[in-house]
Image (cartoon, rainbow, N blue to C red; front, top):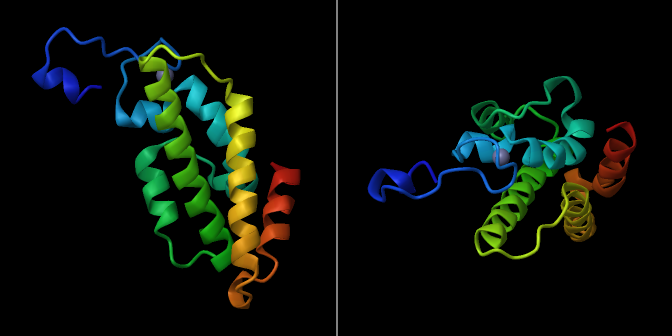
Length: 141
Ligand SMILES: [Zn+2]
């Protein structure tokens, strides 16, 4: 929204998720109190000590080829799903549709990740056990 307001004066820049800050990319992903609840739920178990809500730091993590294949795959997919779901929720609210709670959205993301990992597990190789890796991260998260 900060980008839109540059060419369209008078547009409300306030974040529709928390109604408490200007909507910038860094705010939405994942400084926002709404988005950060979802991101925490989904990624804390995998990231643990390197958990962050900072966009630029996350860009570094999802591009880190030194990470274990399963971890890298999970965090990349979680990142992608979280962005997609939060953006969709943001658009829904801009169109005045009923809000969905962070817990519900996190559950939806978890389910999408499980479905994806079930397919990936079937490929075998470096992804063997990736679904149990994900479950394990959910337990410690
Ligand atoms: Zn917000």
